[in-house]
Image 1: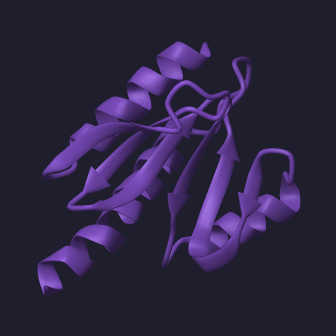
Image 2: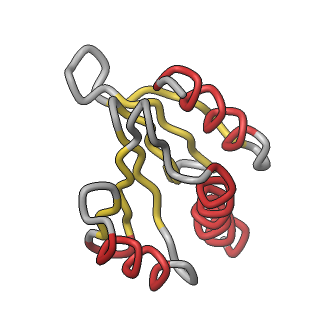
Length: 114
């Protein structure tokens, strides 16, 4: 599966969440990324060769995957996870779908509390 097809699939998943605004971060640079926001908070970045999202309940799952496959999964500060997307062997789409919904939910919940 090619990078463009994966990007289209992930974009469709992100847009299925409620009140999502698509944008671009770092336009014109080598790290240019599509962004998906709820309110003013970005819950998903799709960049060249990787995606970044924030996890809460699934963070321990991401940490386990990072231990098994550190080239693909990287857990960073404050629950942010970077996932490498390669053309020949993408991560499971159902996993990405679940994690995108979780990342969205973390930020949507904050907005509704205000």
